[in-house]
Length: 347
Image (tube, rainbow, N blue to C red; front, side, top):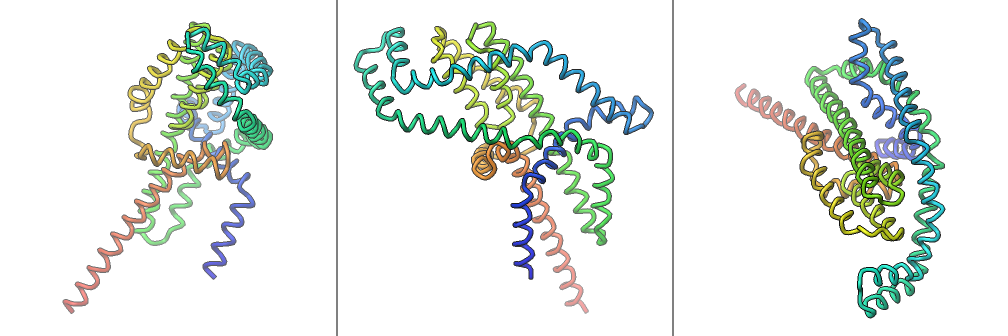
């Protein structure tokens, strides 16, 4: 019976994964807005509903202002870059970009010929990999229509989230188990809230800084590459590396002259984010080894694509909390068993 129930639960999770992920993203969005909602609630004399409405109005107005100021430029540059993508792919596969770059930077003819022959030999593989990447990205975007429901569902979590947590804790009868559940819920609440806000802060900082520096350096498509690289900061370890490679690749294919300076900036910015910004903003809330984070990102991408990558780190951190809770629970049970055995032996 236990095996049957376990299999039915797995079947349900597999069948309803899109709905479950929608609710998870709604929870994350609610964590993101919890702090401003609480602040507005204090200003509005404790009215939770009015506070939520006020935060949504302010958020919508802020997004409208940002889109008005920069949205059109970003969209235009992104469209131009997408139109240039087939031409850039042709330059790579044919080797013409290597010949142009090699002649500009003084490479030897043997080096240029070797790289060109390699690109021509593996042209089919590169085209297939590019087409596969574009296809998977397009499919992921088409399947993300349900993200529209996230802000709507987040309203319910913002309004009744605290009561849901209390109901979960009060549903446990045993005082010890109730205390363990309360501590676990509290740790998960703190971890998720801090993680979501920290990642959004780091991504927003990267969007502003990278876009501004690329614009100052006159890198082609700066207003398309900067926001894309900043958004990838939301994915630990792998996201920043992919963003930097995309920026360098587009700069090379566009004939940008100061690629070395651009590379130095990206390396310096990575150091600032990893050793200055991230420790101060993120802290040690997750307590996950970088190798564990990298494994989670890769495994999440294989299981659920882009969505799995975004969810991998919170899931790993939650599993870590549950594992430590289980160890603590077993330790208490062992202590109780020893105490019971000691009482029996005394009698």
